[in-house]
Length: 207
Image 1 (cartoon, rainbow, N blue to C red):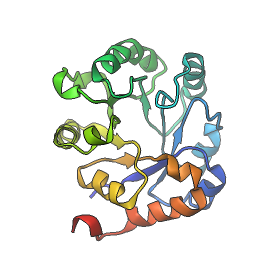
Image 2 (cartoon, rainbow, N blue to C red; image 1 turned 90 degrees about the vertical axis):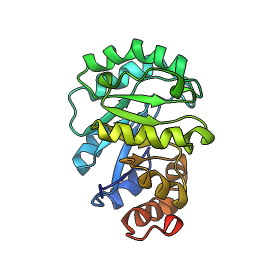
Image 3 (cartoon, one colour; image 1 turned 180 degrees about the vertical axis):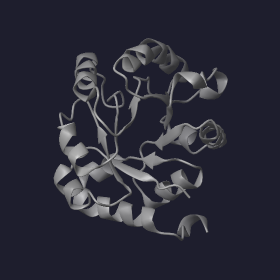
């Protein structure tokens, strides 16, 4: 079974405590303003989100792309998306994919509700980010989508994962990494719990 990563935004003091844990990584955000060089010095793998869930800022996104260009350890960069709308997300993706690629960074497509009714251009991205509503995220289509992505050699991440049950679900269906806002809000409590869950061999909820 692959090692699944918990990507945490911010909480750098707590991250420093657990930087040697093989299941820990970092999720950079445009509005976060964190120094990615510190994370790289810790030896952590990392990715970049786009802040569309909380409010996209195009200039901040571009500025962050410039800051991370050429940096080591990047798993993916989320192309800007439209929450809950796959059709509009794909239009955004077509615009932003070549821009992200121009910085020599790996591009991620954010899966949103309705993707099952759209064409997925697998050759244009190296990672798949599972977004969308809870119903979409936990549905049968996403399980098949993740399976297809992994068969095609894509890295798969699931967002809004804040509980032990959701962590176990994400890795059960084949995700490579997860993140959730709770780990940034309550880092001293939730980060060690999340890492402990990822280190467990027995998955209680799905045994």
